[in-house]
Length: 83
Image (cartoon, rainbow, N blue to C red; front, side, top):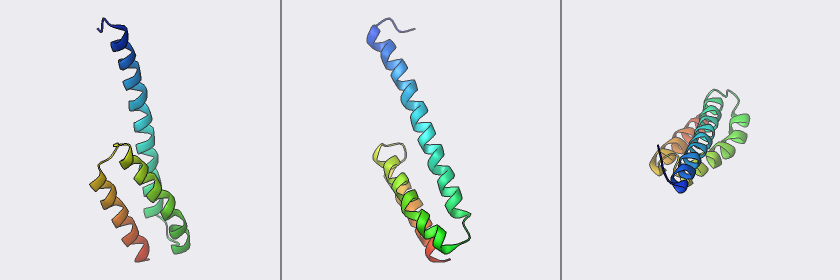
């Protein structure tokens, strides 16, 4: 167990950040699933900017890698365009 006050605080902080990152990542994954399952092109086009923004936010905070974010966005845009 940690002996220093700063180490104890760091442990608490790491856990809080981990939970927040996990929540945000799961929320984005659910939004992507919702977009992929969308049948209506108009609804998908309306939802796409929101999902892309969420993906960009994850990449900016290093929750996911920048290349993974780019791949996800590319696949989603291709899918919506092909509807």
